[in-house]
Image (spheres, rainbow, N blue to C red):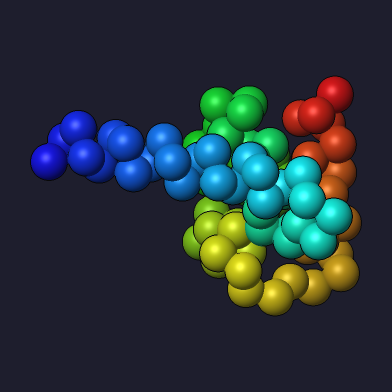
Length: 82
């Protein structure tokens, strides 16, 4: 079971990386990939931009965001992408 879980997570991460570079990538896909590439947890990334972790997780899952939240997340993506 552990091996299957590991493989499923690896495939999910690979899929999200592909989605994040696509022209129609969502903000959630982009922050998920940037956060994972920087080896940050949801909590760590959320703390970095002053958002609640549950809110950032919801945005990664495709929930809508306010303009202020989007601006904070875009700034974090830019900083992590260096």
